[in-house]
Structure formats: C-alpha cells, structure tokens
Image 1 (cartoon, rainbow, N blue to C red):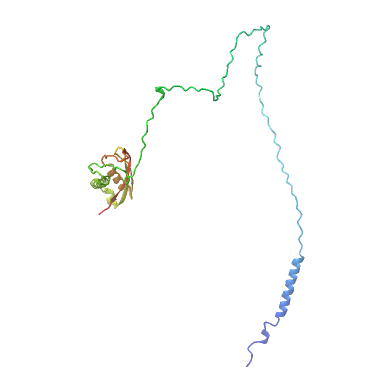
Image 2: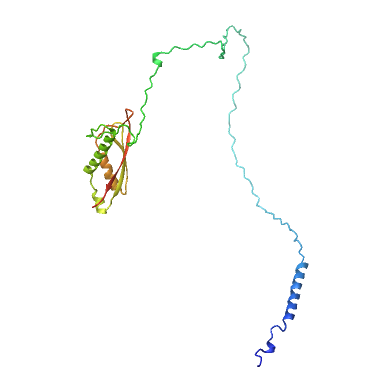
Length: 241
C-alpha cells in the first residue's frame, strides 16, 4: 500500500529552527527592555510680562465755596460777680428695700371692687353615639331606655332618608351610582351642623348633603347630665334599577 502523505509536506521538519529563532528574539527584546534608561526632563520656567497702556487719571476740577467764617465766641464779662450760695438743697434719702426676719409686712385690705368673678367657660365636648349615656332624641321617639332610643333614632333616620331621597337627573343620565358616607354632628342645642360627605361623585354628595340638612331639630344628647355634641355617620346608597 503506497503512503498518501507527501514527505516534502512535513510540518515538523523545521519546528526546532523556528523555536530557537523565536527564543532568541524574545531574549533580545527582554534584554533591551532591561537596559532601557530614562532621564528626567529639565523643568523650564516660563515668564510672561503683561504690559498695559498707561492710563492718565483725570482729576475733576472743583470750585471753592465761599463759606463765611463762624461767629466769634461771646466775650467774657469785664467784671465777675461772686454770688453767695444761700439756697439750701434738700438731700434725697434712698431707703433700703431689703427685708429681714424682723420686718413686718402690712397686707393691704381687699376691697369689693378688687374681686372679679371668673365665669367658667363651657368646653365643646364630643361623645360618640355608641357610648353616650343619653343619645339624642329624634322627634317622635318616646322610649325610656337608652338602647331603645338608639334603635328609634336609627329607624327615624332611615325613614327620613327614604322620604327625602331624590335621584339627581344628571346622575341618572350619566349612569352614576355608588355609596355616599355622610358624617354630621348634633350639637348641644340639637341642631345638625358640620355636614361632611364622601362619595364617588359630586352630584351624589350634594344630594346626600341636602337630605341630612333637612333633618329636624332634636333633643341634644347628654353625658353625665350635660348636653354635649354627638357625631354620627350614616351611608346613603344610590343605585339605579
């Protein structure tokens, strides 16, 4: 069988020679790198002279003001009269304000005009509806117990909302619905005040405000026998059918 490889195409024939040549070149480069020397450069100082044009300063011409000389001082009298000091000057005696244990302090008597009567101002106290001793009484509720008054109050509120409820026409056309939370305060006179609403749309909030503002005058709630403010929150649902 004849060999298919050409003997002239041997790749490893001169590999030793190439290796030796590369090694020599690398050693030469390393030797030159080690023998390389650098010298610091001399620092050269540069100076720059700036020449500006000579500016002549002009002094403004001022005029002398004719100011009259000051008047001479008054002349001394020719004859000096000596006046005898015959007026006695009373010396002011400064009394000491220091006190000691033997000093008696006199207390000024009080007069009726000096006594002022301070009236006690009533504080605005708010008691939640759930814990108040005597809940506000809705007109028409005649129950005796506090729990029965609460139930009657809530029932009357619902009846009032159903009676006064009107769905806004614009909200119906736009298909707006949702739940509006209304918070108000029954003050110490039984009047509905401080109505606040929160809902999905201003139209519904406005209608809920109108309904609560139409509540009648009530008997105020009491805590320890004293009329107080009672906050109350109720949701009003607007739903299209």
